[in-house]
Length: 258
Image 1 (tube, rainbow, N blue to C red):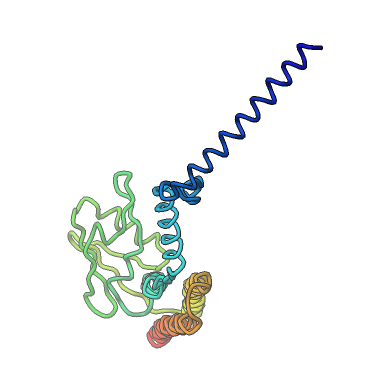
Image 2: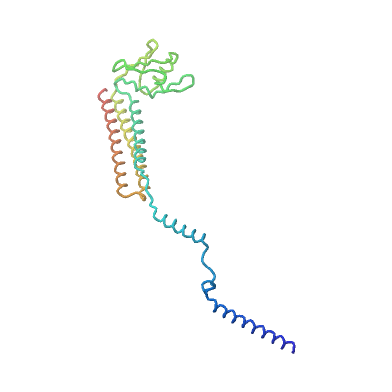
């Protein structure tokens, strides 16, 4: 019991001495106010300089990106160029098909589509021979290699043109027979089908162009979309008109020379 009382007294004395030291220190601070201030005793809870700088940089970059404006690409030239190229290809194919049709008049291109097989190799006739017009009713076929005369003759006879070439030295001469009424009707039907086929090809090219424009419509002004659509429509009308004129000209050629 005595031991506990002693320890309690020691503890009380220690506490009194500590409090007196605090009082002394406070007095010392009161006499030397210029040495410290309350602000000096507060911990610096601010961010380090490098963190403050990085935070400011991030804020600047965030602000700068917010003013960026998306600029829509000018798709007009590429769309029109692609559509025009596809429509021209359709017109070229129509021209080749119409050239293959026999009329009552001799034309050098009427044999171009004939395929000739020589030594196991198939080639277009115009790669093996020069075709020329002797008169409005006669064609001349001059082979680059005289050894291919028989193959050329066989290919011409087998074609649907109804020609029967004759050997004339080292060349073939083919007379163009007059067209029958049935043949004229059949040729006109083929022209009509060819006209419809090329128009469909042109319209498909038109639809592809319009689809491309409409997909990009969300990033284009409405006036720009309407302008591009109008230009594609005008391009379509131009090529359709060209196809119709070609077919009408071919029908006239067939019917007048029958």
